[in-house]
Image (cartoon, rainbow, N blue to C red; front, side, top):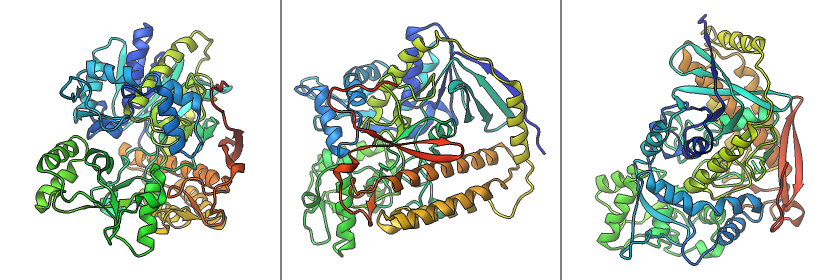
Length: 558
């Protein structure tokens, strides 16, 4: 059995996750305080998270002639009304200043002939963003009193009397258990991928839209700590270029490509133009025998082709390589599209922690931003940056409150539990075996790709039973080294998210988001369910809470 070295780290502000929200929160915190900041990052902050490969546009921006409330209205309409207007407004009001800050950090934002930001519609600006993560990492390292702990996997928050005290983390490479003490904490981790069977299972399962290393750790830690979660049932299912799983927005907005079926008919207007309905239309056309579906790009100019090649090199180079290797650029052949596996992410939908306008969760001193924060969809890069700054400002104020000391005995108990997993004894089944079982169960019974995203109360009950059975067996997994231990923890995180997601899908007895969540036993939208579906883990059981919508100009505080 491997023995872990117990190491204590004391900081003032602990940030879990070194993505956009985490980096901007650290910088903002240091601008407002001389206190210490620690960013714990599972990978390496220079190339981690959703922006590891880059991005070719900032998708949340208020163009001249538009106002923040226009963005709120757009996001509310796209989410079929289930949003927090107070969170959306406080986010939207900071979008353009976030764009300016990113430009000052060195991000190349393209300009038009008049020297203004090059727009892609009224909510987007074009960028050369392949290097956005190194830029953010460099900006963090240039600040004093910000420490980055790379290759550190945070797996459990330390909470006493519903107040955050810190977190436990393990080193990915070395036998070290970190016990991190903090006066305030920010969950800026990613959402959850890999809950469902992806488009390319087996050895190619990493080829998915949402990063495969985003396992829902931040959300899972919050659930286990008793934090209230919201709207997990608003899954995000991306419409993407087939095989490469590259984004389609660059084609739809960049060159005005329309969705067409195998007959050449433009079908998108039949189903609606919200994000979920674009997916729904594609699924329905295929089920009706009019697939495959494509984005019509044939006939675009050579200049447009070149722009698309450059744009995808900034974000999804596999798509550019596909065009170049095949000799069939988008102007010659339309781009086939398909839906991906369902994910849980607060950057695109309203899923995540239930927070107030300060971005504090229901656990005192624990804040959430970016993909982890619920109620505020369509935030993307700049929205995550704004939320990170809001959370940092709130954390500075919160730290004036009294904090409690960590319990050494608790740390020793966690150490013994992990060392028990490092025996390497059980080889009857592996993490991969259980992960594939989990994904198959979710796909078949909880509305995955194989079921055209459809499910019912009966199928969800089967999914729940299977997830509980897999979770029981996961307790018998063992690891030979620290990386294998990380894989075990990640599987457990995903299983926790699966249970909570199933509870949320079961609770909302309607079909509100066509494409994203199709209930065969409740196929219509219902006014009765114009509410938030929230949940808390209490005494080992997920209890669902419904809350009334926060209407226009209302503000919710804990």
